[in-house]
Amino acid sequence: MMKKIDDFLRALGRPLVNFVSSVGNLSLFIGKSVYHCVTPPFYFRFLGKQFMDIGFYSLPVVALTTVFAGMVIALQSYTGFAKFGAEGMVASVVLIAVTRELAPVLSGLMVAGRVGAAMAAEIGTMRVTEQIDALTTLSTNPFKYLVAPRVIAGILVMPLLVLIGDVIGIFGGYIIGVYKLQFNPANYINATLQELSANDINCGIAKAAVFGFIITLMGCYNGYRSRGGAQGVGEATTNAVVSSSILILIFNYIITELFFAK
Amino acid sequence: MDDVKIKIKNLHKAFGKKKVLNGVDLEIKKGESLVVIGGSGTGKSVLIKCIQGLLTPDAGSIVIDDKETVDFRSRERDRLHEKMGMLFQGGALFDSLSVWENVAFALIENKKLQKKQAKNEAVRVLRQVGLAPDVADLYPSELSGGMQKRVGLARAIATKPEIIFFDEPTTGLDPIMADVINDLIVESAKGLGATTLTITHDMASVRKIADRVAMLFNGQIIWQGTVKEMDKTNNEYVRQFVNGSSHGPIKVEV
Image (cartoon, rainbow over all chains, first blue to last red; front, side):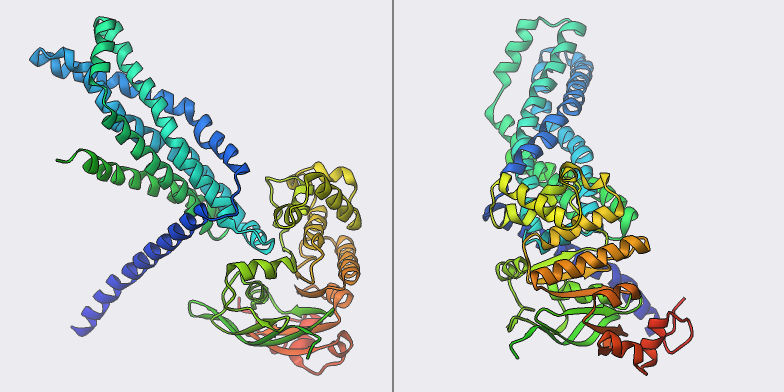
């Protein structure tokens, strides 16, 4: 009997210890990253490249996902509202859905797949080929040189990306509303503008900044800790995308709660 | 004891249950070239990484220039690294940077040299290791293994360090290229008057580079002496290793 309890505790203990130690490692990593983001020396010249990588080159995927998301919301809400004769609500539903939820979450997930994975692979390769050790031996802090520019760029550029996604997503709703559902264009635009509130946009932007932090941080963290050659780098890439996607959805809920819960 | 550059005492490092370093004692004199030999997986790399502070030892002391370095914080550590250069086993060149940017990395980042000046200096060091100036604008992936080693060497000596580490400098090279690299190592270290610590299991390299040899086995230094003494020693471990025999006290775990 004692042995059974013993085995049970053992089976329970190992994952628990692993879990606690990875939470600890991640917390330390976050602490170091934030510290090195706000203390000199800064490598501003890398920010430009990261802006391009994270922001500019993500524009096509973000545009495509948000335009179709806006379109589908217009279509779905119309079929629903038509039952109550409330078709006029389509514009405002599109606006709220896109700015509060769809633009930030879909952009976040897309950028996580595109940029988070690339970061994990790049930094992971640098880790397994000893380039990160080489940085240290050349008196250059890898957190300042590699992590800080990425995290800062992520926090700054994601909100811009989401603003663009907002516009494109609403435009997607407009296309369906006007060309398929035969709304009057002027009325549709008026309804959208009337419903437009700073709070919705701010919520989306706050989410975007947090997602930018999550994506770049998880990309760097998983890459930084990767071990054991090509396989390790592959694992790091997968983990970066999976963990940032999950965290994005969790924090999406939390931020929504903070903004809108009464 | 002014002429001791690096003094390691009772150094311990374990990964989980595996004790890699188990009480290493080692002294390296100023300007000396010490080569640590030992089989694969005996902790040679771990030793170098502990001295550089890339790994934190579990116990023991590492004194460099009469200063205890084990508990150095990041700023002191950075300053210490400015005195050191390292040639990594795989080169560890930054593949996003061109060859000259690799060589001039520390000159630009730490010594704040202007771009043009830094490039001139990089080209000069590249020539020193036998590379033509037109290599400077290539990227590391465009170079052969031997050339990458040379660039790695150039990066290690570009800041004129007082201490240089060589991590298996000849591994993966053909015997002739290995000899060329060995010559370059001796040349550049003597030219700078640097203290060097090399880890290798290439005996040809040992004979060429070493002032003194130390053998690492089971996490401890079990023998040290000059190359001449190494050839005459009765220590069975050393003899087995030098002769490259599968018979002897060192058992290879298969």
